Structures are given as C-alpha cells and as structure tokens.
Image 1: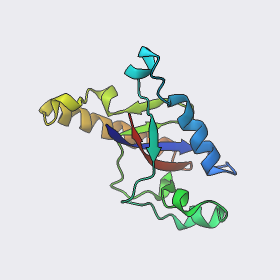
Image 2: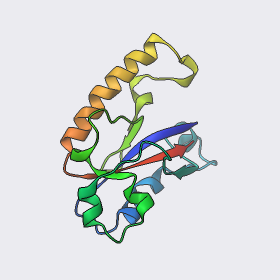
Image 3: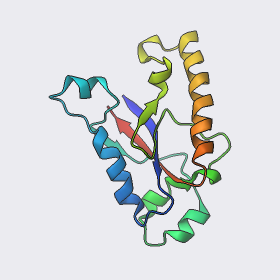
Length: 143
C-alpha cells in the first residue's frame, strides 16, 4: 500500500535531503521483525509526481538543493490551505497517521473511515499549526 507522508524538518537545517533520510530511516521495514511489520514502516519511498509544492521562499534559501527535493518541500506556513496527507513524521521522530485514528483499508469505504479521516484532519491541522515555521517534505511510502 502506498501512503502520502509528510516529514517535518527543522527550519535551521543545512541539508534537507540528509534530514529527510535521517527522519525516514528509523521507520524502514524489517521483514524479520513482527513488530516492524505491524507498525508504520516502509520498504521504499519516492517523491510524488503530482501536487508538487512550490515554495519560492524555501527555494531561495536552499539554492544548492536538488530540485526534486525542493519541488516536494515547503515551509509549513506556505503550504496550500487545503493541504492534506495521510501521515506525518514529527520532529521527534514520531510517525502518526490515519490508522491511529481508526481508518482501515479493509473497511473502505465506510462511515467509520469517514469519521477517522475527519478526526485525523483536525489533528493534522494542529500539528501543522504547531510547526508552522518548520520545513516539511512530502513523500510516498510503500509498506
């Protein structure tokens, strides 16, 4: 299953790519660990090919950064108003997503999943507001 995940990066970082990989790595799938298989883990990740972020402010401060990274990065305060994602990795490394709010693929579509989505979006707005001066990078993870 593919999921759209937003990774928070400290606004003072010198290297977005390094920090992105550092945040993702603890969540890499270990196929020999039942705990890892049951948790929010990925076996590979890619950048989205649509709904790119275009944050001129961020791009002007990271001139040496790969354009593919910059096209999927933004200061949180500059995200589109309707921005959404199915999960987030916070600055402390915590991975939180829709499933933590009761959403289940096997139940799709369902009123239970609709309620989970609404709860998730409310919580996501809080996370984004609390971190509005930080950088975020959107990725697609396969797990």
